[in-house]
Image (cartoon, rainbow, N blue to C red; front, top):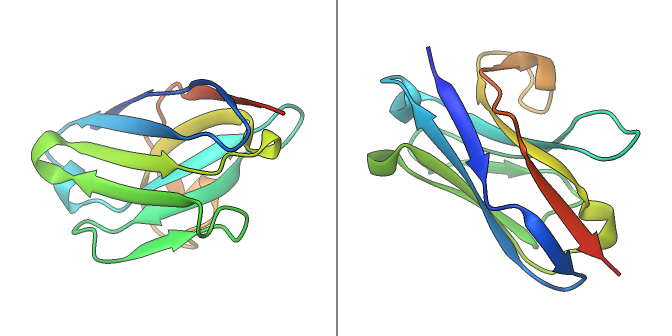
Length: 123
């Protein structure tokens, strides 16, 4: 079993930056691909980024490429999402999950979701 806890969200002006953290408990973290998703008001949960167990491979949604960076520190059981050049449309609750199988961008292929952290970007 893995428990995930997100933190680092907040209110920021457009163009600003935030770094989100996803702290995991459980022995399987260091061997797991992890992903960040977000759910904006009235929207479905959407893929943001994913990273493989070693950090050697990453994937991003087109909407965040060049602005967001996913990374991990297996010694700290933590995955990060550095968000730069934030836009109002990035406003959402951001959650992390552990990838299981199937398409990487499909939220249904992840388990052990945390409660999420709110990111609000003002214009």
